[in-house]
Length: 374
Image (cartoon, rainbow, N blue to C red; front, top):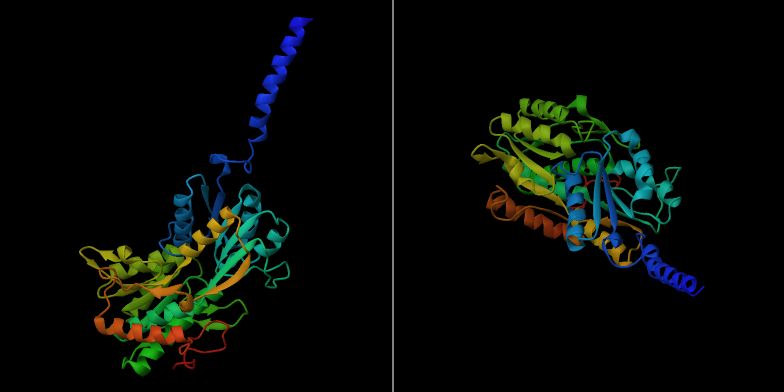
């Protein structure tokens, strides 16, 4: 009997020692690698598109570098019709999912059903099942005044063009891309009026866009953010019409426009969202004039850190020049703009920060030929 009591005591002691280990095995329990935030990023153009998706991914990587215990997974779904289902398929697997693109707006209703999961939504506020814009405590959405950044692309293109023909090439006529188009056209018109250029922006009727309200907006829309072949076709067609400066805002499709420009002579590009100077290398020269910047990575990293720290607040944010979230590359060795062009762009930037210049955008009621500051 004495031996039996001793064994029972030993077993009880072992159970007592093991229980805390099992109790601490979950994701949300204490210190250790299992405590790291599980981050997923789902894109349509990939995290290596040298543009929009990549900059958002850089923000995720920035957070992961500061928080080594975090885990990061990338998912790609190029079919626009399947993106919300793709989110539904993975939402339970991550603490937070980063979604770059206007096409993810309908995720709002899904997040209403999953209040314990969080989303960082880029380029659109969330919408409910009826398509109405909503604000949720578990979604941080950031939209940008893209028209402000592309305004400077328009000025640069107008002042640097030798043929006096320029163009903007975009992916799909989502509000962000229409903003890029209208802002670019506004910048060309501004340069023509105040800086003495005499430049026209060229549009291909066969690639004209229709925005989300059904309104015809013109422009040069490839029809996808992940079709490099189509991007090359559009770029080549514009070059054939004498365009020698193209502003490219088309995700991975824009890589095709880059190819078309590199195969031509005396054609230059303006990059979008990130510094694309290295992508402009053509043998011993570089064909990139500058890049328009939309500072997504900093804001993505900031919101991921807030989730990790427990200070996250869901909201619909609008960012632009006034918060230094829009700009253009002017660092030495990373652009090819003349000193005269840079000076004029800086002059206009100061006016924009003050609110004196408000370029046309998809829904702000202005046109590229009539906006505050023109």
